[in-house]
Every structure is written in structure tokens, then in C-alpha cells.
Amino acid sequence: MWLIGIIAILAVLYYFQDTIQKWLYCQKFRHIPGPPPDSFFNGHQLTLMAAKKANKFLDCFLTWREMYGDTFQFRIKTRPVIFTVDPEVLKLISQDVVSFTKVDHLPNRALFGQRITGTYSILTGGGQEWAIKRRIMSSFFAKQNMKVVFDKLTPLMSRLLETKLKPRAGAGNVLDIHEMFTIIFSALPGVLGMECAMGVDSPEEIGRRINIFLDVIPSQLGNLKKIFGAHVSKKKQETIDMVIEMRMMGKQMVDEKRKDMECWDKNPDDDLLAWLISANDAAGLGDEEIIDDIMTVYLVMDNMSKQLGSLFIYLINYKDVFDKMVTELRDNPITDYKSLNKLKYTEMVLLESLRLAPVLLRGTRWLNKSIQAGKYWIPGDCQFQYSQYVLHRIEEYWPNPREFIPERFEKGIPNVESFTFFPFLAGPRACLGKHVAMIAMKMTLSMLAINYDLTPVPTDVVPVIVQTMAVTRLKGGPMYKFDPRYKVKEQTPQVENEY
Image (tube, rainbow, N blue to C red; front, side, top):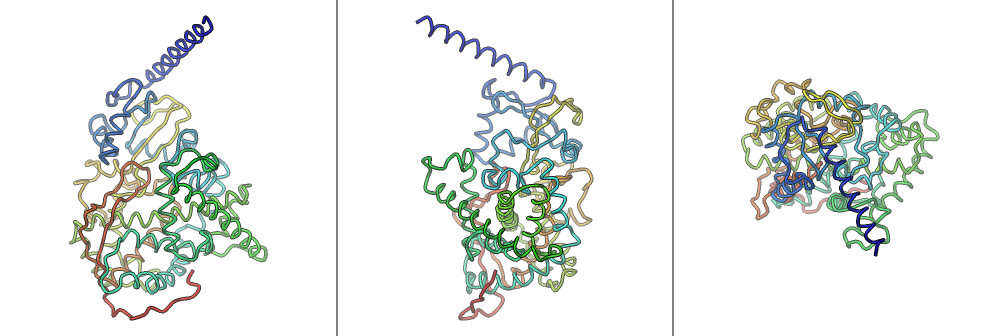
């Protein structure tokens, strides 16, 4: 009996010691303003859970920013977290990779499921190995190499139009336009030297798998190895099986590419997989990390489908913008790489969609040491969070911030040096594929505008952009009617070896 009493006393002492340590840690941040917590132990959990349920999660931070300024603190249970949309601090976060690093020791379910893409991929990696990979891959994605990428994408777009889009659109079918974009962009890696990564030939099947991955990832706890053999739902098990199959096919693809590379003097400018292999080899990483990169590329390609899907959600309510963009696209067909420069209004529309509905809604970094961040001295060993969604809705930087106004980009990106426009991030971790994304999205919009009259179709499910994730997810639609501007063929010829 006395033993139980001693254990109980020790447990109480531990509880009080732990509580005091947490309280003392919170006191280090008392000079930083922020909303009062729901309670000491819950922090702002209840408030944020209610906001998530109402799909107002990031709007909650926007309200707090209006009340407490560009930098404030909130709490995840008892742990203070610094939230900022201060351009000066965002610049510091972007450029100082020593003080600010990736958050590796906290649950990370946002970056496309780190348990699927691995911890050393070109997207989720960090440290010296990642820096080496990044430096090498920058050449492939550099703006001066985009004509090569354009030349590869042009015939792909023609094939997709004939074999995928026209049969579905028929003579006026109603389609989920986001699903259509997923099929289109899932085919892109196939023309960049990554033909077999999914283990299937059909872009529809690739798109289906990607959507399953993205749907299951937020609810997966732990990495895949930890849930092997455990009881999981049928959908999760299907995801696991798909990942295993994809990684096996990825290994086969890497082996085949290595054989090809043995007789090369240098990597071709249009072979992404060859560059990935070279980058991982230079960083001292193995084939497993190359496969991580393959998985990452396929999942990241879906960002373009989400971006255009978000755009078409807005265009439902901005018919004048839609009509003006379509007119420009039809008056200036894309004939070569230089002709992309004529699509100035289309680019403005894309930039405005990146402002209001950026694929990256929010991000996080870990502060390793105490520093002056803006007007506050921030203790080290704490988490920073920021949000493009919130930043792009601040009226001081963007008049009428909730209105879709492409003309605000008429003279280029305003205040680009002041870190108030952040869709592709900036600094060493800025998006490598931003030039590819802009080219591919312009080409897709051109293909649609020239071949179809598109009309939004009301449905019972109102399409929305889910705010709870770090990466945009669309819920529902948008649905559009595709009326062909060409004579529909009775039978569409099949193209062999499309991808």
C-alpha cells in the first residue's frame, strides 16, 4: 500500500514540475501580444477546432492579425507558436537558413505526406544533402531552360486534347474541371523522362491515385512502416499498396535510366529523371531517395490542377474577367515559346489566383536561436508559422483584398521586393518549378479556350477551398459545360505509346 502512495506522490510531483516548466516557458513570450487562450492547458485548441469545422481556420488568423498586428503568438496546447505575416520577418525566414530550419520533430502531415515522399526528397529535405540536390536541380528548372520544356509539352497537349479531352467533352458534356486538370497534369512527368513511375499507362489512373493519396494523407498517423500489419481502413490499405507498387516501379525506372546514362557525356536538358539521379548521387544519397523524388514530382504536379481548379471557382463569379481572358487566348494562339509573352492578361489572371488562392496556404519553420524578428525579441527553440492566405488579404498591401482584380498586376508584381506576394515562397526554399507551372497553366488555358466554350453549371455541392491544410485542397466541383468549337468526330482515333 505504501508503494502505491509513493508512486502517487511522485506522479503528483512530476505533474507539478512539468506544469511549472511549461508555465515558465510561456513566460518567455509574455511580451508578444496574442489572443487570450481558451485555457492554460488547451491553449487555442477549442477556438481553432471550431474554426476548422466552419472552414474558417485561416480567417481566424486573419482576424487575430487585425487585432494583434503582423506578428503575434498563439498556443498549441501549452506551447507558444509565433505567427507572422510581417514582410520583414518573412524575408528573414526565407533567407536565414541557419536560424530558421525545417520543422522535423513535429507531426508534418502537410507537405504531401512526408511518410510518402520521404525526408530527403527535393521538396521535404534539408541540410547539406538537400542543398547539393537543390543547386544541381536549379539548372533544369531555370528560366533559360524553359524553351526546352515548352517544346516537350507542346505535342503532349495536342495528344491530350485528342485522346483525353475531346472524348470526355463530347458535344456538350458537364465535367468536373478540377478532375480534368488532374488528368492533364498527371501526364506531364511522362514527357520529362519519368514514363513509368506510377506503374500504369493511363493519366486517368495516375490522377485517381494522386487524389487518393492526397485524400488519405491528412488522416495517416506515423509513417507507412509503422502501420504495416496494423488494422487500417480499406482506403488506407489501398494507398499503402499503391505506394509500394509505385516505389517498385520507380526502382525499375531508375535502374533502366542508369543504364542509359552510362553512355552519355552529359544529361539531356529535357530528362528530369536523369538530373534527379545525378543530383542524388552528388549528394551521396541512394536510389531510395531518388524514388522519394519521383513520388514528390508526381504529387507536386497536382498543384497546378488545384491552382487552376481554384481559379475556375473564382471565375464563376467574375464573368467579365473570364471573357476577357478567353478573348486574349483565342486572339493569341500559342505557336512558339515567345508567343507565351503575348498572354499578358492571362498571366495577370493567374497571378491574381495565386494571390487569392495560393497552393501553399501556410507554412512553418523552427527558430534555433534567439533573434530580433521585426519589433520583437523572439526566444530560440520555438516554432514560427506564416500564411500566404492571410498575407495576401491584408488591405494595406492589397486594396479590396477579397475581390478578384487581375489589373492589380498590370505593371508586374507590386512590391515584389517587400515580401507581400509569397505564392512561390522566396530565398533558398523558393519553388523550383514555378516557371514550369506558369508555362503549363498558360498552355492548358489556351487549349481549353481555343477548343471549347465553357459555362459554369450550378450544383448542389458548392465548391470551396479547404483552409485547414497547408496545401490547397478543393472540395466539390467546379462543374463546367464543355461546348466544342469544332465538329465532334464520330470516333476518336487511338494514339499508341502516348506517354
